[in-house]
Each structure stands twice: as structure tokens, then as C-alpha cells.
Image (cartoon, rainbow over all chains, first blue to last red; front, side):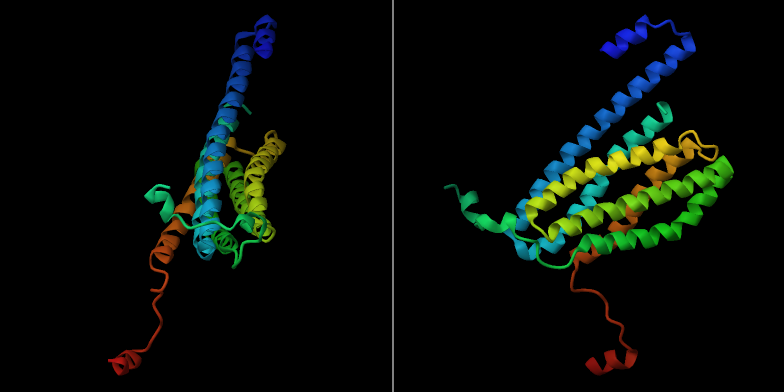
Length: 89
Length: 164
């Protein structure tokens, strides 16, 4: 909020203001985009560890699917990151 | 105790502190992804050259390298921590996720103003390579997981005739 107040108080031209708001909002977007996959990976890993603890003999299969699940979930964060670099950097 | 709870297998309380037995499947998957990534890299780089020019090709090569290193780091962290304990594996995966996102950010931040970078090409390559390689790998893994014992053995027609 303080950053927004500074931004409003600063004497910027229209183009500079637009750039500043783009950088700010893309930063927020990346932060928000990283939270969802973080929750997803936490849930996925928690359940996988539970499965490995209950059935250690199936650990190999669980780890295989867990790794792919993590990678797919991480793709969401990467999409947020790409939006960030295209808009904010 | 409910009937559903009675069906659940009991858990050894000390299992979270023990290493996970068996080979590391994620290292094998990561090696597969790396091999396939190197196969498709020239195609992606060529495509980006056509669309964005030489800067696009260089950015695309950088993007492919970022994705492959990301996969290798993820697999390495899981494989190493699984040798210690299940608890360590959980910590390594969640911590590794944040660290790898930070590393990708730093890797892109470091080159953002260089003369050879094209951010649209880099972004498109990161998403396409990451998702494309995963889907390609999943096609093989789905078959292996569904039918673990059905890998066809190479036999000569004479052998199959004798077996009858």
C-alpha cells in the first residue's frame, strides 16, 4: 500500500505510471500464481508420504506419480512466471 | 472405530525417520526427460529462429536449458533426501520448490537486459518445453504403471512357434 501511495505522490508521466503499475501488478500476479501450486504440492507430497508410510512396498510407484504430479503442478507457477516476465520485466 | 478406518493398514510410527527403500524412479524419469529435451531442443530453437530471429533462437536454447536443469534439480533433491528419511523428503520437496522458483527468477533476471534475449521466445519455450516433455513422458509412464509386467519380450518367430 505504501508503494502505491508513493507511486501516486510521485510526479510521473503517463507512460511511466503505466510501466510502474504494470511492474507492480505483475509482481502481485507472480506471487499469487506461486501460492496455488505451493498449496497443491504440499497436499500432493503429504498424501504421497502417507501412502509410502502405509505401503512401503509401493513406494517406487508412488514416487513416480508424485514426481510427475509435482512437475505438472509446478507448470502453473511457471505460467505465472512467464506472465510476470512478459509484463513486468 | 468405523468400518473404513478398520480397513486402513496400520502405520509403523518410526517410518518417517527411516530412508525410503528401493531405487530412485525420479532420477530415471529426469534422465528420460533430459534425453527427450535434447532431442526436441533443435526443433524448438529452429522454430523460435523462424518466429523471433537469432535472438529468439538464443533465448529458446536458454529456456530449454533452464527447464532441463529445473527437472534435474527436482529429481536430485528428491533422490538425495529420500536416502535420509521421508520427513527430509517432504522438506526437500517443498523447500526445493521455492528455491528452484527463485533460481529461475534469478537466471532470467540476470539476462533480461542482454542484447541476445527475447522474452516472448524465452517464456513460450519454458512453458512448451516443460509441459510437452511431461506429457511425452507420461505417455510411457502410464503404460508402465498400468501394465508393469507386460513389457513385450523380443522373441524370434521360431521361439513363439516352439512355445505353442
